Amino acid sequence: MTEIILALDVMKKDKAVSIVQKAAPYIDKVKIGYPLVLAEGLGIAEILSEYKKPLIADFKVADIPNTTRLIAEEVFSRGFSAIICHGFVGHDSVRACVETAHENMGECYVVTEMSHPGAVDFFHGGVAERIAELVCEAGADGIIAPATRPERTAVLRSLIGNKKILSPGVGAQGGDPDAIAGIVDGIIVGRAIYESSDPAAAARQYSCFRTGI
Ligand code: 3DU
Image 1 (cartoon, rainbow, N blue to C red):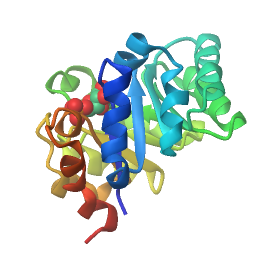
Image 2: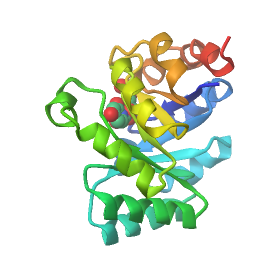
Image 3: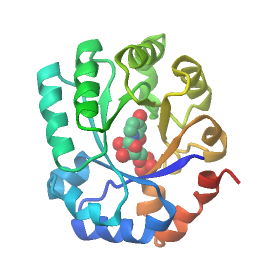
């Protein structure tokens, strides 16, 4: 089964609540990041917790270990179940994020390769592979890897074994869910759902990947 993770990058609380309400039957988790939190505050997590979908904090944390720990502690104190950090910052920062997540019964996912065109500027040439090794050494729960490049995500899968892969890039960025669903644990979809005039119908289109049928 591949989970459907809604990337809730809307700027208003009411819209965020309305989209989650409509899409709820067809999604497994909700991912929130800077757009919504900067616009409405971290308290949005408590408001959305009513819908009983685990919340992922996508702050792509990329800082020194102490600052990383402070950010992660705040995230988990607000009820998030997982946090996303960058991997390029190195072993000590990634470990700080993983440890804080686990101390709080949460999960830590590490960005290993991004999905946009410019990601190839730095993540290719061995960097993503090195980050994947670091993910295993640090005991992280999984990685973020691109739906826009299934062949790259397959390479990363071979390096991380059965750790989880959450994959953004389906829909608006052009990633094909049929090509990626079989090698990942979760598909992250944002605009293709929240910009739709019918978010429930848009989310339902991905339901076949949840059941594997
Ligand atoms: O392109 P969408 O609207 O489906 O949104 C994708 C989400 O995933 C969005 O929140 C973005 O910040 C996040 N993301 C990527 O798109 C690519 C990455 O490599 C990592 C996270």
